[in-house]
Image (cartoon, rainbow, N blue to C red; front, side):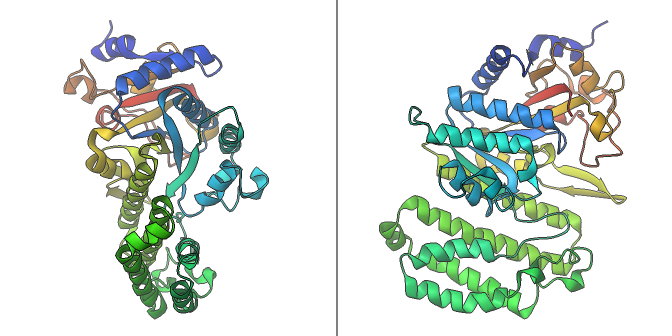
Length: 418
């Protein structure tokens, strides 16, 4: 006997096969039509990092959104300051080959993933094809931090100072003379032991505190001289320079927090708030050009609070998606993803009755399905769904649950991922 959840799946699911462009494009078109014209930012979450098929799905989704639905940019869960290097390559400038930019242009070792290579090479081909009018942009929107370390603020500050030096060399030189000694050796900022031992963090040192003040002064000068600086350059270059200064401020605040040892939930919350700020900037930069596909882990893009069991501690914080829901309202939409099986990540077949088991029993091998709070479903229908077991090999995998109906506008569920 079918349950209300089974009836919902049978009625609403849009099956697709990545090996069949016709069925995939048709499913994307139907989903895009249902989302309507409101979203400026469309999030696409991955159920786990490292799932090759999810990355292929992202690539194909972005290509269709560019070709048929007015998307002009993609923003991924990688360092905001570093992504400028990749965007230069995508634009046909900068490094001569992908290998020349893949380490410096990505964080988290994401440049080594073949799917990211394919994404970037496709974007570059579009931009350098004289028969195509589209100009695509590549962004990272993450803070330049890792689980156990954070970057030096040098790169972000230098982007701003390079901009200022082209307009007011004397002012830029004065800032550099004050800032360079305060930054010192990058290794001090990037010490991987600081997160575990806050006493080793330099985030509250006199030099770091003075650098935070200098950064605030730089931001204040850019703000005060906005009409003048835009007249000498242009609005896009000005807002980019300002955003890199703001990114440096975010990073310095993060280093200071590490030194205060507030606990991982606070640091995770700071990271996600900064992600949202970066995405708000990216959306404003693309406004009038097109829409933006945002790609990151489900947890970063969901609308509700994030929860993570780490080292026996239950962590809760507000993810970027929750901030974006407040900032953008209906102009932010998000697709979460789920998987049935992933042997490489220790995820076996889902237990009977779970949402993944029910969804992967529908025609596939992939399917989009609108949640929208679960049209036609009562809270009781959803609340009684059992949650499948997780993964002992991949602690960053979180099964779908009743909250998936409110955290995401749509779901994309694959039978398996490698």
